Image 1 (cartoon, rainbow, N blue to C red):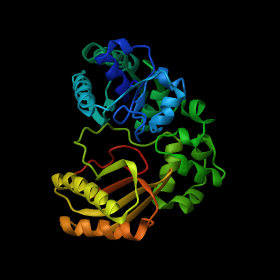
Image 2: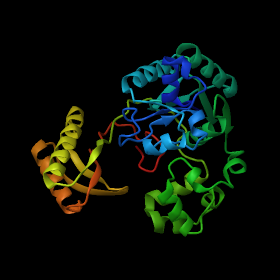
Image 3: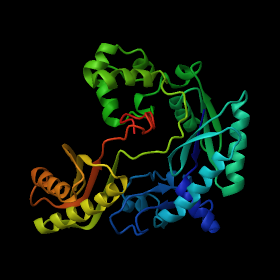
Amino acid sequence: MLHVDLDQFIAAVEVLRRPELAGLPVIVGGRGDPTERAVVSTASYEARAFGVGSGMPLRIAARKAPDAVILPVDHEAYTEASVAVMATLREQPGATVQVLGWDEAFVGIDTDDPEAYATSVRRAVLDRTRLHCSVGIGDTLVRAKVATGFGKPQGMFRLTAENWLDVMGHRPTIELWGVGSKISKRLAALGIATVAELSAADLDLLTAEFGPRMGPWFRELGRGEGARVVDDTEWVARGHSRETTYQHDLVEPAEVEAALRTLAEAVLDDVAAEGRPVMRLTLKVRYAPFLTKTFSRKVAETADRDEVLAHVHRFAADRIEPGRPIRLLGLRAEMPMPDDARARHTPTRSGW
């Protein structure tokens, strides 16, 4: 199986639209104004050389790369480019394509020469879209996904059971797909710092820390094991979320309430299109200057809009600290999965 990942996708799309930007540091984020509150969506390799990265506040990125060209986010342009790329992948001989997002997908193939197939895929994508991609080759989805990082940019790399520990064993667990900073710290507290240590970890120890489902899953991840089938079943969202960074801090209760209602209405519009009830709410609050807190609460399944709005406001009243300036609010609503949904969309911790 292959993992195809477009190189610096958003920045590359912008450079195609503005060829004069080729070779220059390009940053895409917000409305393209570093004086506003916004974060970096992506940065070209030239901008990354200055230490600019996704999720970084735009004003800090502008400070790190003062000569960079800063552009606003254009979702429609990126969606159009992504559709062309995915269509190209589906046209490849014998390919089964599992889309993971705008800029990446798994491609299942049956071939004796995956490197040659990967080369043809990269060429086909470039010929049709003028976008470069990198390809990871693996015998599991995890290994293919991780392999792509070693092939970037504009290359390929192969990870299998034979070379997994040789390549990954000495690396920190945070370099695994599905292990973030919080999980890596919890693993480190158990004396597990590297991929090799996780692959050989005591199962009882992991189960005690992470539970009977996630404990064994993490050890499997450390071994590079997992799903071996690319699933092209239509993706079904587990939830929908929205968040807004405010240009001026919200302080007054009426401001916070109005902002929450606007977020909730947008999320519920997305949920309504799914035709499934809400079962869990997650609230994200970023206080000034930059302290972020996230809270989650299970609610009785309901498709009643007014009932969900009431849950949101009660949840916020319990969790938001009154009078404390707020610079960002986010809301996520989760739904029960339909019986025929893809059993394992991606091998990440949440499973979706």
